[in-house]
Length: 206
Image 1 (cartoon, helix red, strand yellow):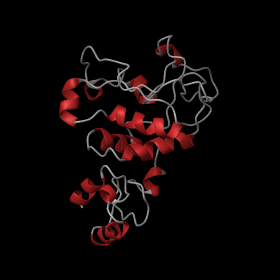
Image 2 (image 1 turned 90 degrees about the vertical axis):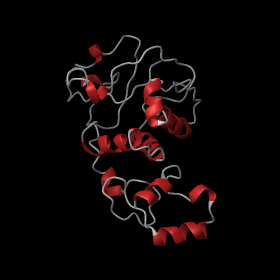
Image 3 (image 1 turned 180 degrees about the horizontal axis):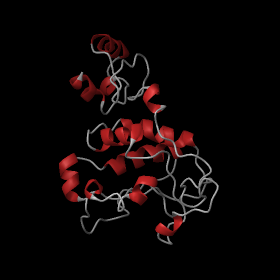
Image 4 (image 1 turned 45 degrees about the horizontal axis):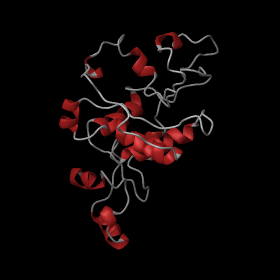
């Protein structure tokens, strides 16, 4: 099963690197695909995570703040003051690192399952994009520290940004930002230091 999973990393459940569909079907019979999270048989489902695991996402409840996207419970937002003034809008789909959302991010970030970024981008689009057409000029992923690039072999932010750019049909620029220093890994931060990152998994700033 691990070897089969590795074969599927870049194909996102499709034909293996352009293999004939008949050969792909034969491989499906000999080495059935399994969900990356619960390892149940996937059958004909093309994604890398089964429907049951996707339903376990802890989706942020509504109503949400119009600026930072954080759930407000109908009260005045207490999170916007933690954002810098230049951040005009931020959105998240679910809570991380807990639950299925955290597991899926972990598979992408540390497991190298880059194909799952396509599934993540589709879920982000389905959750509902609150920006109108033309609001976003370009999608820019934050660069990863050189040491982490060498360790993982890729920038998970850039991989997800590429998938989002395809879904939203907007330009992507991976060279617009340059990292000038390495920062502490979030894994090493205290709960207080990670509070904003926990609620706002990613943001787009105008």
